[in-house]
Length: 116
Image (cartoon, rainbow, N blue to C red; front, side, top):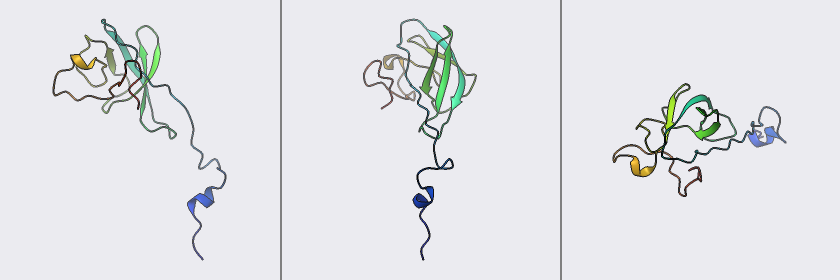
């Protein structure tokens, strides 16, 4: 007799094999000429989603979810805008990033969030 398959043991879906399904709307705030500052409040790794999600609270008390770049940490200060500095997690227009810097999560169309 053969062994039982894992999918057969799972059955309809008991609490052991059911993933927590949370949906986070990951997007970037539209970049304007001025600089907007924020802080990473929480890094979320849920079993139902693929990438790590960062919860960012901005200085105007808005909270947004974005896909976390490698090297981000809780409490990190971020800058959004064309005058932001070159650092991990900062969001800049592609034209203002110098050649040779690593680029993460490019938007194909302005405002689409970059999540493909």
